[in-house]
Every structure is written in C-alpha cells, then in structure tokens.
Amino acid sequence: MTIKPTRVHAFNHADALGHHDAVALAGQLQRGETSATALVQAAYQRLELVNPELHATACLQEEAALAQARFYDDVGNFRAFQGIPGFLKDNLDLQGLPTQHGSAAMPDTARKHTSAVAQQIIDTGVVLLGKTKLPEFGLTATTEYSKAEPAHNPWNIGHSTGGSSGGSAALVAAGVVPIAHANDGGGSIRIPAACCGLVGLKPSRGRLAMNEMAKSLPINIVSDGIVSRSVRDTAAFFALAEEHYKNPTLPPLGHITTPGRKRLKIGMFTQKISGDETDTACVEAVHKAAALCEELGHEVQEIKVPISAQFADDFLLYWGMLAASISHLGKLAVDRHMDTGKLEPLTHGLAKHFTRNLLKFPFALRRLYQFEAQYATAFADLDVLLSPTLGQPAPPLGYLALDLPFEQARERLVNFASFTAAQNVAGAPAISLPMHHTAEGIPVGVHFAAAMGHEFRLIELALEIEQAQPFKMLA
Image 1 (tube, rainbow, N blue to C red):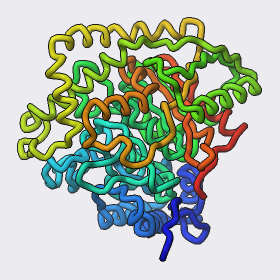
Image 2 (spheres, rainbow, N blue to C red; image 1 turned 120 degrees about the vertical axis):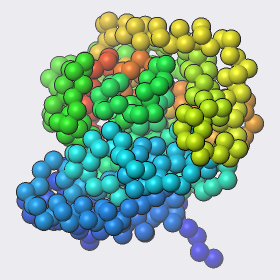
Image 3 (cartoon, rainbow, N blue to C red; image 1 turned 30 degrees about the vertical axis):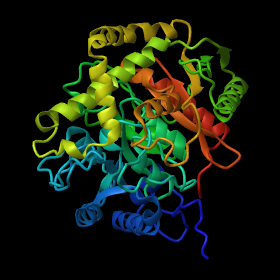
Image 4 (cartoon, rainbow, N blue to C red; image 1 turned 45 degrees about the vertical axis):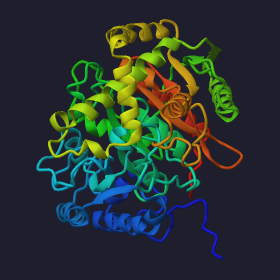
C-alpha cells in the first residue's frame, strides 16, 4: 500500500526557479543568468508535478505564455517583473480564456477582452500561465465545491487552502510560481495567505485599477493584489503596478525596500467580534508577534475589539445581497448564458438569508456606509491594529463545505473568517504574515491593519518583522 504524503511542493535547486522569489528571479533575468522561457517552462513542469494533488488551476494558456516569454527573451534588457511567471484568479477576464468565477453555472466561453486589473498585472511584466480556482463567485472562505474537486493545501492536502484566492495561494506556497493574483472582498487575499503560509496584502480601496465586478456595488468592498512568499515581492509588485495606474486620491507608495524608522503604537486584540473564543494557536501567534514587535521597539497595548457585533450581521446581510444578485439577476448582471440552476447550495442559502431579512437591509447598508468613518477613529492614537487573521487555523476539507445546512455553514464561516471584513467595508489596508505554525505544521497568519492609504506603514513593518524572524516556507 502506497501512503501519499500530506505535504506537496515542487521546490528544487535543479531548475530555473530554484527557491527564489520574484525579486531574485528578476535580478537574474536582468543579469542574463536565466531566461524568461526557462522560468515559464520550469513553472509548467512544477505545475505538472504537483497539480494532480493540489487541483489549484481553472485553465491554462501554455502556448501564449511561452510566446510572451520568448518575446521578452528576444527583446532582452529586462526590467520590472518582465518574464516572471504567475497566475490570474479566475474571476477576472483574460482574452482567450473563459471566466467562470469558480461556478458550474458559468459557460466555458473564451473572453474577448482583458480586464483592467489583469492588464495592469501584465504591464508589470508578469507572464500569466493561466487561471486559478476560487469558490463560487468568491462567496466563502474555502476553495471547495459541492460537486467538484477542491483546491488542496500544500502544507497538508487534507486541509483547506482558505478562500477565495485559494488556488493562487496553493500554487505560490507549493513553489510553482513566486507570485499570483488574488483579490479580497471579505478577506480573500488574507485568508488563503494565512492558511497557506504566505504574505497577503489587501491594499486600500482603489489602489489598483477598478475591478469591473465591483463597479456596481453599493459599497465597493473589493481590492486586488497578490499573494507572495516574501514581503519584498509584495512591495515590488505594488511599486511596479503604480507605474501603470496611480490613484490620485491615495498617497503614492513608491518602492519600499527598508523598514521604517518610526516606532509604532500598535493596538492588539484577539477576541472575535462575536465574543466567541479564538483558537489558542491563533491567540498564541498574536502574542508572539506582539512580543517581537516590542523587542523591535514598537509600543504594543491590548485594546478592546474596535468593531461592534452588529457589524458581523450587517456584513453577512450585504454578502447575502451579493448572492441574491447572482441567484436572481445572474443572466442580466453576470452572463446571459449563466445557468442559475447549477449554483451552489451555499449561494442559494445566502440569497435566502438576504430575502428573509430584506426589510433590515436599508438599515444595515446605512450602518456599513457609516463604518468607514467609525473605523478611522481607531487610528486616532494608534498606528496599527494587530489581531489574528482567522478564528482558527486552516480546517480540514469539508468543514466549510458548500452543501452544509445553511445555519451550520453560516456559524462556521463567521467564526472562521472573523477578523478580515472590517477593512473591506472601511476601504483600509491590512496584511497577513505567516508568523506561526501549529504543532501539526499548519500555518497560522497574523493580521496587521492600518488607516486608509497607509499601506506603506504595513509594508515597512512587515519588512522589519521578516528580517527579524524569517518566514518558514515549504522548501
């Protein structure tokens, strides 16, 4: 009997990717020590090795990716992230590939145009190898399906990758590519980063180009970015992206390469807004992070949860509104060929939750509109908030299954994704850092949040933390 390993990764020293992050690979390209073609070929070879266990991809474009890599090699004079292989999450359009949003209800039809965010990523030089899995329309915090194979966590393939950017996180953690696109409407960059042991920065609202799916939302809760294995990759990506789109309402980031000099006032809390207990491993991770920050000269003080329990109910109702829009208006709002009869049970459950509470929605929406100003008051005498990223480490697959009875699914989801939604409504930045592991080796993320437009503060702090305590990777 063959026993399958619980951990799966593709890191090795024999191919062009090695153990390097994107910044290191970009340097090799610029010095002529490797080629874009070699990097892209190595990534596809690594994908072939691990994807039978991870099931992280939605679709590929190998011919187009290799053609782009050969173009960069022919031109030479590499700059930025030109030639670095990556992936796009399957909820943005990329010309020539379908966009199915993780849903069996969506048609498998190639798109004719490339979305603004995808183009911005391409403009940084990243060669997109294909698209990664997400749960249906990103509506839950695990990359699972009721009738299809889930994405598997490379740290333990019996556990969830988190969601909704779970496919991207699995491939970066497993060493297939150094970075991959992710986006975040309630924690969907930070949650899979925490589950898969990665760096996940949700930027301020509007930092990257507008996500087309977010344009019609009453409150734009969606921010795009990446997941990476190093803070410097995240910093470099946002600096490069800023060269192609700079939001005039936000302070520019520039390329942050060193920790900040200012010693920060950090407010720490570990309690969920529901009042339920947070898993001990997540609490331990926060206390270790706080101790490290104090060693580095920052001031850490314990504070009360700066968010009311009402917020969780209001956000869930807003989430239900999104599901109801898909369920009832999908053919008009998403795709006229959409088959709403194939939507997941959780999507229908969230939609029903919204319709049952329809009369409460105007009041919930008003409170959510007011939340941005309320959230800003938390930074009147603090620079950064510190909390767990999640209420518990990555759970076994099935714990957040999409066909659970709705009330059970709701309770588990709210208690798991307990700390991330506030920044989506406020529009503020937050980052998850892989600072801890359980006794079983499952990554545990620590969450730092800042005021609107203050990504620089999070990146500077993250660089300092990473230098003091290098993050553990699968390799």
